[in-house]
Image 1 (cartoon, rainbow, N blue to C red):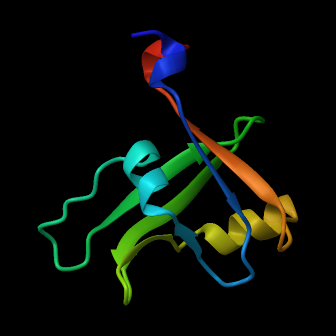
Image 2 (image 1 turned 180 degrees about the vertical axis):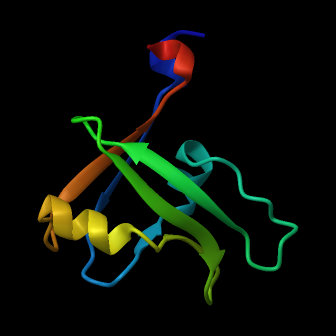
Length: 99
């Protein structure tokens, strides 16, 4: 499998609320799998931007209907990047072997 086929992209418009709702399809393709045996599945994520800065997010599966959310750390990311409603961003997931 080529490194290109291992990469997954997640693109979504920025919302104005304190968290970010990730489409189920993108969560399944791009985010590490959650332990769905937990009553409220959660995990901590670390992402690096193009400048090498690390961003930490809490990934949680909750709500009614249940959905994937990035919560803790999201507001800091949005504020620091000066993102506004209507902006878009891309997360790339890759294997350490791609480097």
